[in-house]
Amino acid sequence: MEQLGEHWVAFSPLSGETHLVNDTTAAVVESVSREVPVTLEQLCASLAADAGVMPIDAEDLVRQALQMLVAAGLVREVPLPRAAAA
Amino acid sequence: MDHTDPSAVQAPSARRRLIRGALAAPALMTLCSGSAFAAASTRCLANAQTMPQPAPSGTPAADTYLRVQLYKVTTHAVTPCTTATTSTPVVETAATGKDKPKKPKDSGSADGSIPEPTTDAPCIPVDKFYVKGADLGTYPRGPGIPSSSQYLEISPTTYLTSGSPVSPPTPVVSEGYVSQWAALRFDASGTIVGIGERTSTGGALLSLNCWNSAFPAGA
Image 1 (cartoon, rainbow over the protein chains, first blue to last red):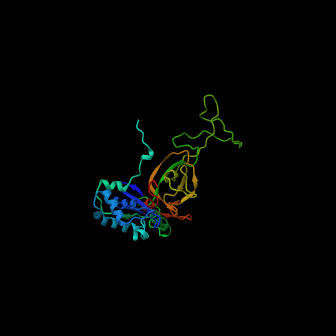
Image 2 (image 1 turned 135 degrees about the vertical axis):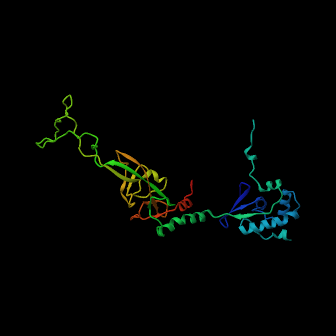
Image 3 (image 1 turned 90 degrees about the horizontal axis):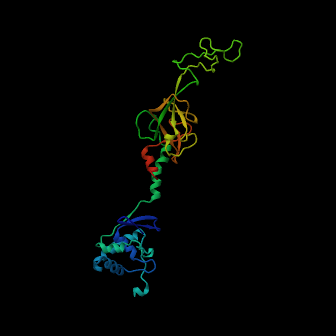
């Protein structure tokens, strides 16, 4: 993901498309890890801390961002590991 | 002395920028695919090859087609020649059939020398019209299209080119652009394959819009 002025551009190898995203969406992409999946709660806590808001206030926005990112092929949903699901 | 450790320079981060402002509504926009956009832009080149030609390819009026201004060059039909204001040459040929010139009857030089032979052909101005290769800019050129240092003769009435590209004619009596233009014809790859009226070389007229779409300035 590369910065382009006030925005960010990200290329999805899955779709072959290039996307322009804002800071909030880009922060979600930065907060997810390729190696270790993160939960919605972890994402909200992390980004809320960055933005200086309560996690509950960030949840709707993070959820919206994730929906867009998954649809664009930039983020992938994975099943929870057994330990986390238990 | 200031010294910046390159390893300390961090990549820009969207998360760090969140600290500076409130969490805004997320946004994601998909950009056009470059290759698809390029393919759509060059399609007009291909389409032009099969479409009927909408305008004459030579015109004295303004139009929107890629065209080049005709260049008129006036030379003398025969050189050397004698203009009307010059006295008639004073050379005659010996009656014996020898070509050696004799001394003029009425105007010998003071030292008695014999003048160099000249022709008595009158100077007849001949106008020819050309397309200058230098006026074709940086467009790719196919066979028979003049290079930047060559001219290609074209009829100002039929807009048909004739012959092959030539060097600029000399000596020139007068030269200059005229208010007539010949359209350029291109193949599907954007190469000039013809000038003026369509001949066996084919090619299609292109509008400026099509050209600018397919070959944006600086691309």
